[in-house]
Image 1 (cartoon, helix red, strand yellow):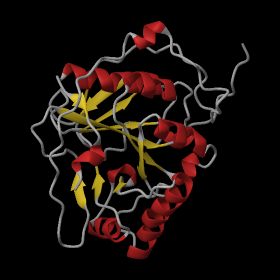
Image 2 (spheres, one colour; image 1 turned 30 degrees about the horizontal axis):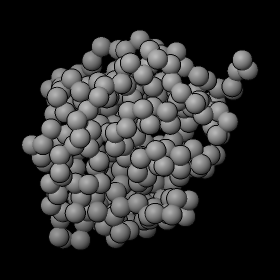
Image 3 (cartoon, rainbow, N blue to C red; image 1 turned 90 degrees about the horizontal axis):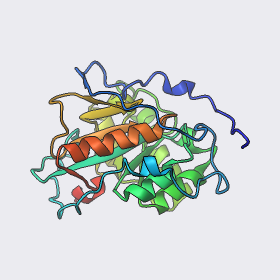
Image 4 (tube, rainbow, N blue to C red; image 1 turned 90 degrees about the vertical axis):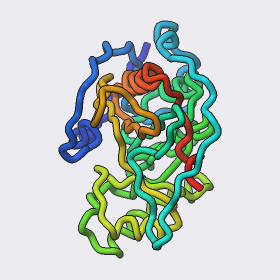
Amino acid sequence: MNKLRTATAALLLSVLVGCAGGDHLVTSKSAPPLPQSPAATPTTEATVPSGLPANLLARIPKFAEPPAPTKVTLPTDGTAGWFSRIPTNEKVAFITIDDGWVKHPQALELFRAADVPVTLFLEVNAITSDPGYFARLRDAGATIQDHTISHPNLKGRSYAAQKREICGGADKLAQMYGTRPTLFRPPFGSHDATTLKVVHDCGMKAAFYWKETTNKGKVFYQEKHVVQPGDIILMHFRDRFPDDFLAVLNAIHKAGLTPARLEDYLP
């Protein structure tokens, strides 16, 4: 079998666990590496596998249908909402995935097999090499939201500079995928009052941080060693995407929760 080229994921090295900015993290045990197809090349229809190995499929938990969502309350002062956890007692958690540099060929089949809601916060510069890859993920049920054009640290920048990245990212994603984002994640989770003002002025409802992250098959917790109702979980498109995705699914399942769609909880 011809080996696919392995593309460089060096730009991801600065974001080990979502650049959580010094949050105290508790680490779960690492899952063993999965047998993987070469992971880091932009995929085409020809490179997307038609199925997944049986041993990988067996590790995907089954979930109940999520309950009817209870909408959050948004600010009325001209700024966007800010959430790291959706305030709810419903037994749900939210899977979110950032950037888009590594386009793992098993992601599409994992999404189809798991059949759970996923929100993608895409960086424009990371996806331009193969925007169709993310269109296929969207067609498998994911939703596409904004993560800027070039992934700068927004905190402390001028209104105009932040607007170029935030509105510009939303505009370009709308051009690529036909629907303009309504949600935003600031790179590194770093933001200030200007950020939330710009997000609102760019026509988006809320911006998001996280309570758990994952990398190399490990889940990192900021609080209790368990996913809690309403938690927003951060992933990235990385070389070990199958390990990370399965680690998140099983952490949610272990907590007695079910994945829900983040967008459904916004008014």
